[in-house]
Amino acid sequence: MLGRSVPDVTLKTRVRDESVGGPNPFRWQDIQTGDLFKGKRVVVFSLPGAFTPTCSTEQCPAFERFYDEFKALGVDDVYCISVNDAFVMYQWGKHLGVKNVKLLPDGSGDFTRRMGMLVKKDHLGFGDRSWRYAMVVDDGQVVAWFEEPGINDIGEDDDPYGQSSPEPVLEWLKEHPAA
Image (cartoon, rainbow, N blue to C red):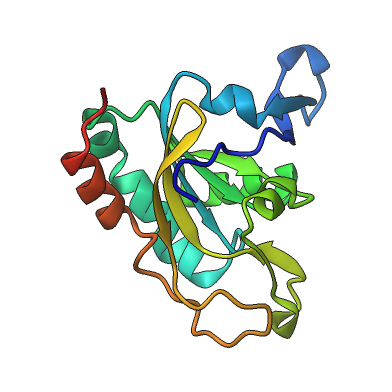
């Protein structure tokens, strides 16, 4: 993965727009991932799903807790990408009280598939989901990669979480300051 360009795909998002009116003032907005990464140093982490145990109690909250440390080390943005739709990601962010990490919906799994991280979680009834990983991206190029061991499609794992936690990413950033 190192040195590879992140995929440039369209993510279907919802943004608040008071001109829409009514009880649900949101409109659809397409976001190109290439634009999200262009000219910036970004930390990305991906997880199996919103509202799932480890993702909700540890991984996403941990990246939120360390957000200021990431910023102090020259990171422009912290993104969480999950194979969930925009509605689910929005509600999950509200539920967790996320204020800094940007939650990106990869509803069709296009980004995750092109990253080579799309796995089957049929043994849990989830369908296609992301394997857990994190990365540092400089101007669209993967410069650091943190993948949980044992990637598989048949549930032969205990949902590992450690390599893709914020601490290894922070250590890498301390050793590799932004240019």
